[in-house]
Length: 311
Image 1 (cartoon, rainbow, N blue to C red):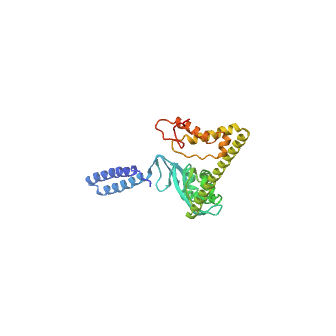
Image 2: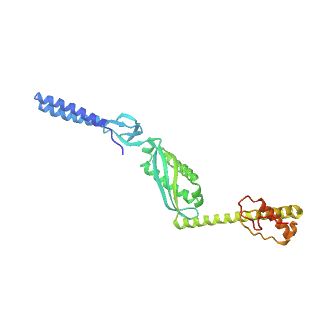
Image 3: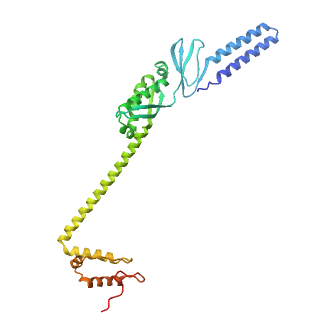
């Protein structure tokens, strides 16, 4: 709410006070009738002068009409109007104004009811148009914003609305600015705050997203197993063409299994022993003995014992 300036009231008090002082002087001189007229004239003059003096703040513009016709846009600062002949039609705020608006239970293009909240930032750039070309420019802007939001929602599917808020905000700004430009109003920006969907649909979308993540996880796991199988097949082809490499790999795997610090029982098929040419049980015993000798002091014995075989 606009606060009136104290200057007109001060002027009224000063002029009326001077008039009362003159009236008292006349009364003291014995002119009683003149004193009354002086007081009345002082009151009328004080009212006319104080009514004529107006002060507009830095952010305000005043539309003045003379006998019902537009005269000028006054302000900021001190200005004067003629009583009875001129009147102030509007005090217009030139600062950036924020308006919130929303669309409730509006169907999207794919027939989903949504509630959308948005914020509109706008300012008056032409006070004359805002005062004379529209009855109530504030209400007109709010209604224009709501209808534009409903139009945008009806032309957009739900997924695009949830993911593309910046695009929706840009479209809203363009549409509202086109509608309000003839009223002397400039739309600075529009921000979509929130898009609310029905709880049942929200739960269904959450389940769909969870199922999609599980599907992607299984696809990744299957692709990993396929890559491992391809590498195994490649290794098998390499070992098939190079028996020496196969024997070295088999001996390395057996060595890695036997050198563990914990007691371990390793079962080796006889076909593997023959293919690695370890010489049967004697060869395995010698390999185990060698591993036992390589253990650090205090380490527990392996599955075949740590003492060297007696000759």
